[in-house]
Image (cartoon, rainbow, N blue to C red; front, side, top):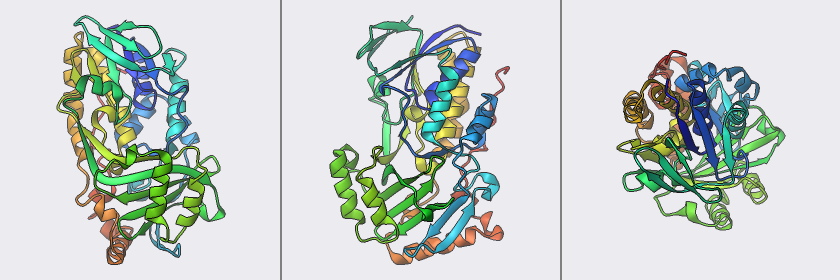
Length: 396
């Protein structure tokens, strides 16, 4: 066991999870987060495969299930709200389009924070502005707090990590997948029920409604688009763009567009993957979306964050030299990441048809996939490879 003082940037999912495992291995973590408190925004995320196993080893699975959204499944519906295909949360062994453990990102983040803050230093309302690896320490400059030195620094602040870009900006491949999505929370209506609903409109537009465990509904609007910087527009301009794209599409979209105006958690971003030739440089490394975002389309982002944190902490505990630990972390985890980032052929276009004929064809395939005889043949399209990794024991 090696004692180290580690600074982690980002108090979302990967950061607090890493802090938990560092503590378990006798190391001390400090987390710095730009937000003034744990973030409340975000949509529903799922835990699958190795990520769920990590949560179990953390002793948090019971707590996470107590805060689950309890969606019964997902229905693909037409403009008249008629179900064209449906999958229960238990479909594909609980690892299908809706997993058997779905939780709001804010709830997961809060649970991880509450589990770690008694033994972890949290620096809210601050961020790293400069890093200098001296070979023996990393000198850190903060925007608001005093300069400090740490044995190691780990960037865990998301796919668009500012901390990562201070060191790895010249090598990071931010890869758009051709889809832009807006997320926000809207008031619950009786029609929302207990199932998630997905509606396809023409021209590559989709809308989803997902009931949560707080008495509200999580909405999203997505559209196929080449990279053009919509995520950099001001929120009002983004909303105007969505109104222009989605007005007249029917289903519950008028209700969604109306509620969007007063949503206090509106967020629009282009869907991206992050690819890096190396996840470390000297005493600085990356974990979670900052290192290997697979995109929400993979269905594995949260599980990869938890798994990466577990493996990184375990390797740091078992190697006296950080370079060897970082190398082993990458060697062990990269094949799993590569599988997760390999999206099914045609994604996202196959799930966002541009024509009515394409939508009918998609619904026909989905309906067939909901039948046991066909489901196995379509397994690779609907079930992420979350169970293809076995957690190292690390003596825990």
